[in-house]
Figure 1: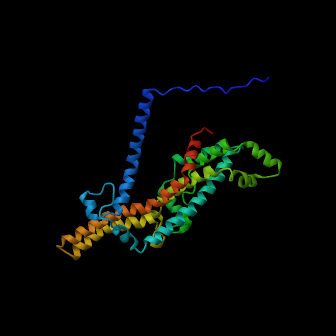
Figure 2: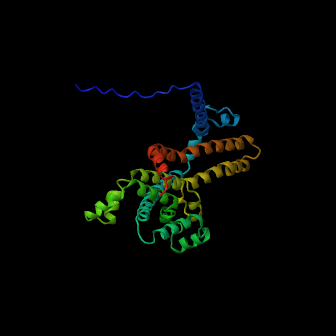
Figure 3: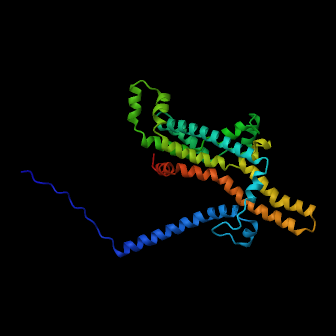
Length: 310
């Protein structure tokens, strides 16, 4: 008669008082850190829909006080705002797509074994520490006819060496070389293998690259400031800066010149400019926050992959 095999009992170690205290302190600590990170963001959102008087009086802490949309109304009355928002979306979407394609192709090439691979890797890494500078770059783009063009805003800074190293490490460690050998046996070349095998299996790192490049391009203010002169091509950040500067300085000065001696007009202009600052932060950061939330699960995994040695 066959003996009945009983499952082994797991050794359950009881949690001590010190363990429970540590868990409680650890949880409280990280909740405090989370609150310190989220509260400034929440305060900006709350202040953007509160009245200027409540903000200046210091009565805005957790909830909107004297609900008001005066900041958003002032922003959307600006004729260039919607146009600049569309420009930023176009620059970010097209530029991110181009950057991801270039990065994935370069990372795949560096993940292959070929003569001179170390030399090419050194060439890329060298550019992380040494550049030609702003003036040579500006003169080069000007002579190429890219100054004040949409094309430049899309193709400039298309490759980040840091992102290239992360993508190369992902391909080298996560995609077995046996797949390449099997593809070669079936008659596939590098292009076929890249588009039919590498890209479909690289969804995680592609999502991470989209976050990195997308955030960087959306927040890019300096490139437009240097290379754009036509207001119809301005980015959202440039227009918001103009609007805030105008309302905080120019509007108050106009009120002073037009209503000399009328302190109420000057005070209202300054208070309105303060609310506009909070509203502009919400408008400019909302797409980035949405992108982070959508890509969060890929983002954490991809950053961990980039920490591996490859």
